[in-house]
Length: 314
Image 1 (cartoon, one colour):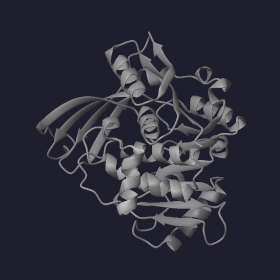
Image 2: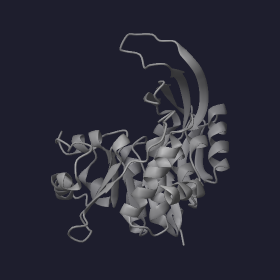
Image 3: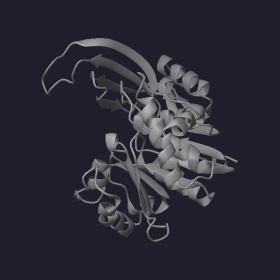
């Protein structure tokens, strides 16, 4: 039986321009479409987990403005409890300015706005009653992230930290994180610019990376590899089962914005349902791939039946 998932972090209004190719520095290109969509890594992760069957609560902050109202309505419409999302009278809702090219690739600039006001005081212990998983990212202050991790850890929840947007984290936060989710570039930076195996390399090539993470106190790590799938580094698993390669799910990508959030939300949902880390990653690989087949983020996220059907026929 799935228990609650708590997500602490960001809500942003996504201002997205679609174009044939992304501009070079100093260059202007013509766009061929514009949309304002609900986003923010934490709101995205919460909606993704909810659509995949999780019971989800979101803790965050938005401004007292139209973007804030839009985000609250969309997140609640995705089945997420938003009663702990605070409306700030002093800061505008956070925004992300996104360019998406004809191949679905993107670049993103975020302005924190009200997300920057989220504080440890916003994270109360009763928010984690019967919580199975806490989902975190780094779009809000590290003091708030660590306070949430400590409170959830003390409540017995699994702490899932998405190390994005990348920042150095204190060892105290690493010690509180049960599962860390990174892409290959973030993994390299965390390990001091360590060289990563080729994305298509055999699982055995990741032994050194697993060992380096374990030495830093991170015993369960998911490394996403884009079109090459992902790799699970689980130092707590039995010998011979500590590294698992998760095959990619092949789709025709339209917009990759928020695919990483779909992956994170899916992992949280499956961990809350009692699956192993490798099982959760395999499910999340399909969920994230399907999310790229439509424009936008939250509206593009699949439901559990769509993912399970894809797994059945693949």
